[in-house]
Length: 223
Ligand code: SAM
Image 1: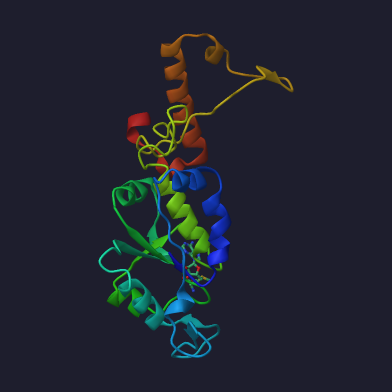
Image 2: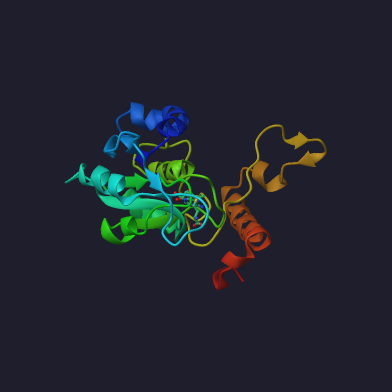
């Protein structure tokens, strides 16, 4: 990963699932300061936009030099960008089968378009909103992909029933103890011990939740 703010990603990479995956040797994340590939005295990574306008644009040279220094192990090169292809579970699955990924984090008004055209780099967005930098989007992508790396998620916490994992369906609601909380009981079927009934209830509840929260995902199979 190339960023001008390596410290932003260090904490999340050292804790919880990502920290454990790295500790167990299942994941290797190398965070590089993009400024190491600058050549001028000020280590500048940005400049004013051609054509005028507010803000600064990230220069192409440091990105090209940085990515080319990785050869032959650069893998797919991904530029985080709100103007990119939307990251969804299908793309996460696709990326999880890659041996290497190179992630580029933008800042300011974004990155010189020749990085996309010339490296080339695939633009990936984590959603239809704008953040100040690509570090959090890169972490989102890394965590989503890492969950699918064999051995990262133990048997007790399966991702196979997660939202979006079985087609266009959200996850079913979950409950734990206490059985009744502030007058709200757990659905009776979940304490019945009847696993056929429980599976049916979970499927119906997932369909209902998808209809309510994400009608855009509605699928004729669930009509
Ligand atoms: N002018 C750009 C636009 O409107 O498309 C926004 C640039 S944004 C302020 C700065 C950087 O943050 C981007 O280059 C990108 O790396 C990152 N970024 C911001 N929002 C993002 C999103 N939704 N998905 C992925 N990356 C994002």
